[in-house]
Length: 402
Image (cartoon, rainbow, N blue to C red; front, side, top):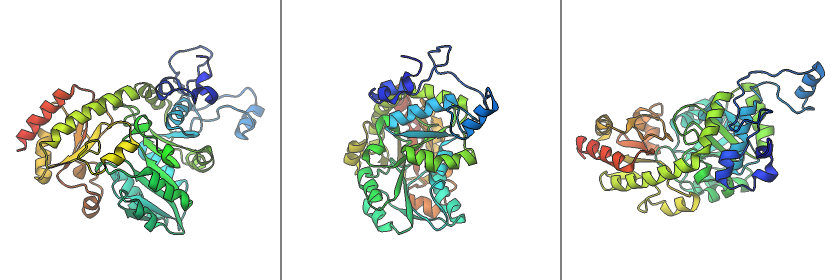
């Protein structure tokens, strides 16, 4: 591969996703390194004052400041855009920085948002608590029913915001139907695709306008760094999102960008192996717990929709026990291999109790409305041998009286 081949869309768009994940976006320096270089710099020097003025005026190509551009960060942005099938991408310091920027960059006082009720706790805080302070109203609906999106539309509705699959209930949204409603009304659809990644689901192909990520999860894949990303049309990224991020500074560090670049190289391998493991573990748990929320299983009511939109199961699902928080915590405390951790997307198997961790900031009434009960546990199935994970869950279930 030549020094700039990875940046040439006329070439890279013809590569298969596995090739894009390894080579897409790569721009080699004059030293010809095989692995992407890490440019740990905050600023850039110019040969003359005129060059500095020309770059700031947009008349000369080049970097000005790492809050705006960085070679390592730009390589990651190009790679994610390729994998997503997007025209452009901007990365940010965390998943919540990405979600916040994707929403705030396009709303003003007096605007209205429609949001799926099943969502990560901080995403609900964003719409339930932060946006009302600035005069932006949100209608929360059951995103499993496309008609509820249509019924919630107002003349001032600007955004549909939802996760699919949702955290932690695993609700699945009909992307084609909901994004079609948004397009009909001139509304921007913003989809949180963190549970699937572009390796398993590409919302833009179903009509979504914007896809947002916590790249901390499966994209990194080994629990090392925080990162976020927003992908969409060049017009949205450059004309709507960039003015917001340029001036508010939710910037991704070059080091973190480099780590995620390395993670993407193995994303397809990891997520498919973890999906296989998750199906085995989920099938075991289905026989042992009262309820399991895993649309990859044929027994799930949204199984057919899930299969139409996703290429594999993904590593994450939730299940419920009848003994509430006490029994859920007892099960967690009995684990010997699986870690108690509120992260997901890791190569290690992790489990958490959402009601007391990731969704503890959500009022109980809203939490229950979302479907996050005191007996719910969320499991991220890792790359360990699935038999070892099942054995650990088996003994923990017995210890918790299940």
